[in-house]
Image (tube, rainbow, N blue to C red; front, top):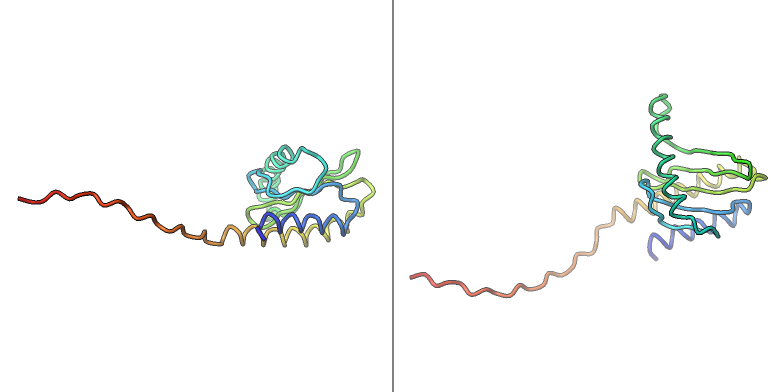
Amino acid sequence: MSAEAEVLDELRRLRARVPLISGALAASADGLVLAQDTTSAEGESVAALTAAALGVAQRLTETTGQGAFRELLVRGEHGYVATYAAGPSAVLTLLAQPRINVGRLHLEARRSSTRIGELVDGALDRPETPRPERPRPETPRAESP
């Protein structure tokens, strides 16, 4: 199973554990969608906005002496957007209904973000399978006099 499929499985398991999560997305830190489990077709936009928010949040935590970024929670009129660090190269972004238990959201999302970080970082650490080299056609060598 590929890392993308495993990440998608983790997103689905998270949504099954916390039914008031209405969408889940794993993205690279630079805003590329890795996997998504949402009915919304706006995954790429959400991933790009997450990357922008991540940059600001990282700068804010470092500038204020709070250390490395861990999570960001935004509460809107119609629910929550929560973003969690998933290793050094990925993030988990969740959309949640306003009735969600935020403590439960954090508990389950932190577990999933750790797992997603392991999957993504493991995929990045795996050496690519080397391709066999093709034999090069021999070029005739000039004979010396």
